[in-house]
Image (cartoon, each protein chain N blue to C red):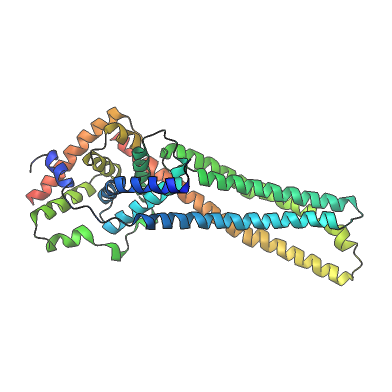
Length: 203
Length: 168
């Protein structure tokens, strides 16, 4: 043995390594895809249920004040906006083509991350303001003017405020942290690939 | 667009045809067989999940190798790339066990490949698999001219490292 051709012959010499069963790979891939699909299905079902409840309330109950309907309309807009944003995000992730060049994939993920940051900061701020105004308008007639004892009204208000604080400051922030960590991990990996290829090009 | 049966048949064919090559590429990239098998599986999981999106802009083999290259390279500098002790088998340990000259030479070849830069390992493994140069260039996103220069250099480097070991 004294040249590269001998190495090439050597490369092909070993008996092929046993390969995992193709059915196992398909099963694993399908399991991963099903997990994502199940998550999207649960989220969409919850959203549909919420929209159906809203439509039922509008149809079944006759409200006296215009602002109550306005509140419900604003809630509806919030839900639709949330669903559209979520749908666009999941569509981007689903369509991400990991066979394309790392540089262009990195660009699209960086764009996605910028949009995600906007959604999770400015977008979420205005979403929360809008949604809380919507609830305030709706609760004016259904709670504030309702013929119930003042104590119950204060209790309701306290529960609402506590729930909103938990949703925004704990659950929301935790989910945002997770989302950003995932996107950043992908971006870091893509940067590493891009740098490695760039290093190779300069050698 | 494929229906599920077509997709399964196509995937089966692709797996039979390209999995051995992809596995050898992964073995050239990492010195641990178990990890190479993980990378190969990860590659084909992505192939299965994205098969419907394959637009035919590149050859399907190029598309698969690109996924394999991106999968291998994405594990560099990643914290997850720390090899668990139970996976540390293969070439280092088996050195003393095997007395067969050919097996020693094969291990020596892999060891020499592992001394190359990360992308060089993948390029040379594709050269050794006799994948056409235009396809390799498309896989690693460099021009064919640049690739030829690079391959010439990598071949020299690999031969030098391999025969350095042989002299020891």
